[in-house]
Image 1 (cartoon, one colour):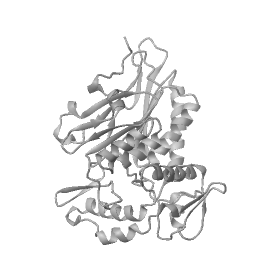
Image 2 (cartoon, helix red, strand yellow):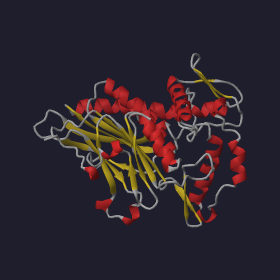
Image 3 (cartoon, helix red, strand yellow):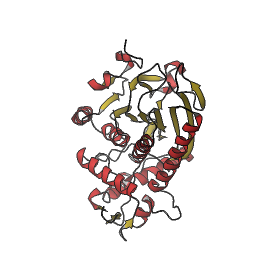
Image 4 (cartoon, helix red, strand yellow):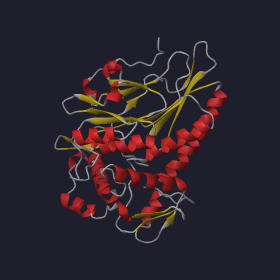
Length: 364
C-alpha cells in the first residue's frame, strides 16, 4: 500500500537497537524490540518494556496481525479475497454502495469530520488528482530523463470529481457509496496514523503499559519507559537537510513525551526531480501543485490519526493560518521548519523540546 505521509522521518534514537533486548538496571521490566515490513509499505518497529520475552512476543503477534488486517482494509491498490476494502469502494463509484468493515466506516467519518473542521486542505476524495501526480512521480523516478509536471488542465479536470459531500456513508448499514462515478478515495494522508491509533488502543487494552509503536515515522508512545531511569520517551526529529549534516547532527530536535503521537510531513521523502527542482507529494488543493510554505512540519497530540491528518493540513497552509489552526485545537502542538532553516514552535511544543531545556529524566 502506498502511503502519502510523513516526509520527515522521526528517529527513535533512545530505543535502538531495533532487535533483541536490553535489561533495565534493578528493574523487573526488560526492553524488547522487533519490526516488520509487510504493512503500509513501511517499516513498523515496536519497542516495549515487559516482564518477559514471552509476554513481549504475545503483544507483538497481536500488533502485527492487526496491522495486517488494517493494511488490507485501507489498501487502494490491491484486492484481497473475501475483503471489501477502499479499492472496492473506488471500483464501485457511481455503481452501488459497498458494505465494508467498521474500521473503514470509522476512518471515512473521521476524515470527513476533520476536513470540515480544518478548512478542507486534506481531502480523502482527492484521489482523481492525486492519482495523476502518483503516475507522474513514478514515471519521473523510473525514467528521470522523462520527468515532467502533469498538465495543469488535466489536474483542473480531475478536480471536478473531488466533492467530499459525494462520499455517502450509511453508518447503520455499514456502507460507503461514491455518487460520482469518476471519484476515487485516497486515504494516504490519514490511514497509517488512524491504523496506528487503533492498534495502540487495542494493545493497551490488552495489557501493554509501556511501549512505542513507530509505523514509518508515525510514532505513538504508550505510557512511559519502565526502565527505572526515565520518566518520558525521547523522540528525535530528523533534520530535513540530511545531506549537509553529519551523522551526529542529523537530529534537528528532540522532544520528550508520554501517551502521545508524533507525526511529520515534509518535502523530501516522496519526490522526483524536474529541471533540478524537487517535486514532492504533498499537493495543495488550491494550487494543485506541491505545497511550498515549509520544509517540514511536526505535529504532537495524543491521537495518532489526528496527528497524521493535521501534519498534512498544517503543512499546506500559510504560517499564520497554520499556527492559528494548531492553537485552536486543544491538545495539539506543532513545529515548523521554514525554508531558511528557521524553526517556529507553539509554546506547548517548546516545553517538551530538548533545546528549550526539556529532558526525559526524573525530576530532581
